[in-house]
Image 1 (cartoon, rainbow, N blue to C red):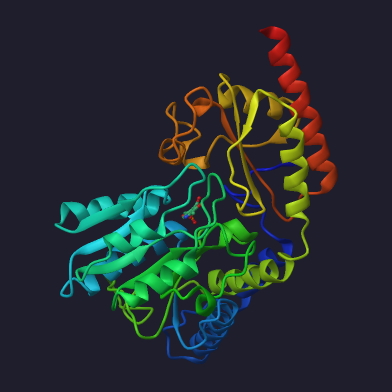
Image 2 (cartoon, helix red, strand yellow; image 1 turned 180 degrees about the vertical axis):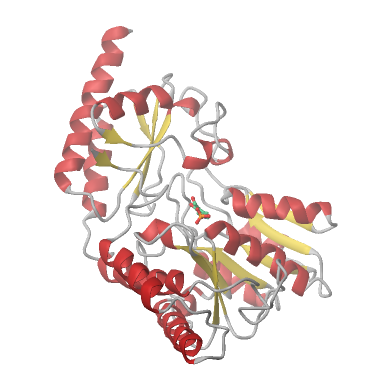
Length: 376
Ligand SMILES: Cc1ncc(COP(=O)(O)O)c(C=O)c1O
């Protein structure tokens, strides 16, 4: 089986699994307990967090371990909104964020917050002018994803940060779930105050993610209980989750330069240039591991089933929308040509892939198109 759905989730790295098991077997004590075993677990937790903070260039900042990207995004949107609402009630995000940002914002709108959703062009790019025009003194939070999960667009996060910082004390959060391990993610270079990362997208384990933030900002808690994680996330902290996530982050940061994703992507795009029925949806500047293609007047699901029969796993625009009959919010936002809207597929590379697999994909793509053309 060839697995090209790594933006949905990845196969856990064996060494990450081993570290999870080892930490569970040895450091299972509650890190909040004051006995020696608890203190040892606490030391390991602290060390894992230090490693994670170092990997995103936020050494003197904080990290809260969450259950994944969704929870970290909710903590960012609701937590910062609640913490800074005395300064204003305005939030800016984009139309193509992951549902964990969009739906968290929609909930805040019900509570009286005002949210602007920035539009994007046909490449999925926001306009810096539009961002600038929306910033106002009541803007307390801007959240713009680094890499889009459906089409791979990379947003100009550094330029956004410059605009946002010029305008005052607005907090800038970026969802880096799809960029960490594929692009350089340094909070210092990006100029952001907070980022979200999810472990299962980087060969880590499902059930862990993190919100990183600088030491001069702090979200409010969004769940309540024993006050663990400096009051920010109540519940017994899973030391093995922290240990294994730190390991997954380290491995993927080390590996991302070594993979040939850009060349593989070019191969697929070059092959598509010869096929009239296929349009490349991903923009030229997109992240190297995501390629979105669209078939003219063919349903994406038909393609996915055909590829599956040939042993290749790909997805429609994203895992969240794969069961929906409608085009995704991203496909709508980029205003994709009507004839291609329902034919979107996504190929996403990961650590386990090889160039031979890419070649096989291209062969099967040609076969599929031939079959469709013969059937017309
Ligand atoms: C950009 C982006 N943000 C957030 C998430 C949510 O992450 P998780 O699955 O860990 O909740 C995803 C997952 O698909 C994603 O692609």
